[in-house]
Figure 1 (cartoon, rainbow, N blue to C red):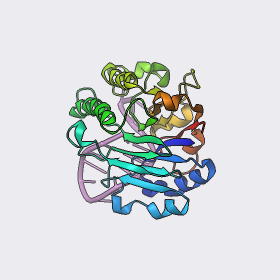
Figure 2 (cartoon, rainbow, N blue to C red; figure 1 turned 120 degrees about the vertical axis):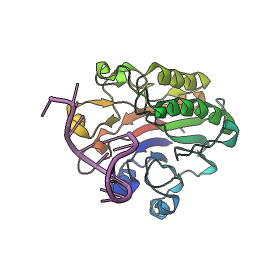
Figure 3 (cartoon, rainbow, N blue to C red; figure 1 turned 90 degrees about the vertical axis):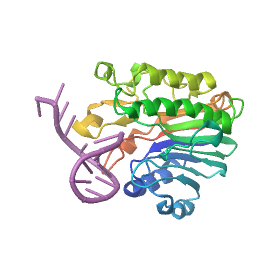
Figure 4 (spheres, rainbow, N blue to C red; figure 1 turned 180 degrees about the vertical axis):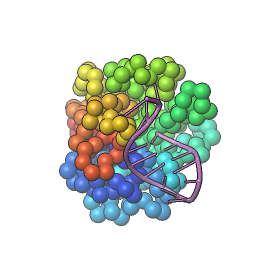
Length: 258
DNA sequence: ATGGTAGCGCTGCTA
């Protein structure tokens, strides 16, 4: 079973590239973020024509998350589960079970800056994500949390850590909250296969950062032990960041043994 | 040189 995540940065603009990529890579499950669509504008029929069932949780203009699956979709929960606390006013997560794996597609708040209210929102959001996982699932089952975490787990995931002192994406508080998710029972499936640095998934559009190799690894695939034991291979598909009108994120792919 | 681009939607916000 091939699982992938991709922050597409507007599905309206990116749909042709997403269709092309699905045909080439043929993931069984694709979790998307930043669709920037309302639910009634989500192109479910287009994906159906490519063999994918889909669920979408959107608001239009900003945010928006989706799951596509060739291996079935049930137990759908849009937004945070009620038992985890108040719903998120933004459309930032959706959960569904696909092919026996409970999958959550997440678009973690950016945080903007450490002194911004949005950063406190990011920290609260990450704490609620753990309660959400307890509400919808368990570390003892096959479960994946994947998407744009807006956190670089380690300095090797940052092109120049000296440029990210007292910054979002690297601050100790958000890394600690990511570590709490790992303590809950999740591990970074990409890091199971690679130890080296400079394996980024996002590059700022500005200043030619992609071509200069200035990126961050912030798109993660986390899985419980039952999933990690099956994780045979992973890549960041940097080719999808090239050419005309790319997203600023590349897809991350993980293959699970059946 | 503290810059730069992209998307949304129409002025400035978000990333």
